[in-house]
Length: 50
Figure (cartoon, rainbow, N blue to C red):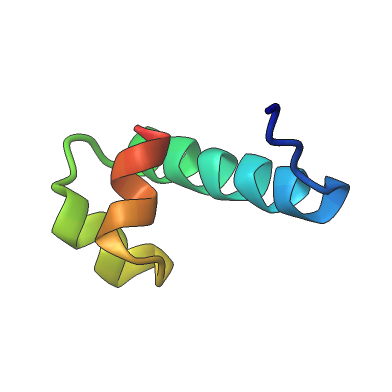
């Protein structure tokens, strides 16, 4: 069984990833908790994108 994401989920995933990359460009390093506070996404979401 293949899990297919709908386009909205895919776009949201790409947006989260780009937000993380942009944050790292501004200041590196960040802990997952700091990214959570800054971006407003759960730590589990940020961790999966890293």
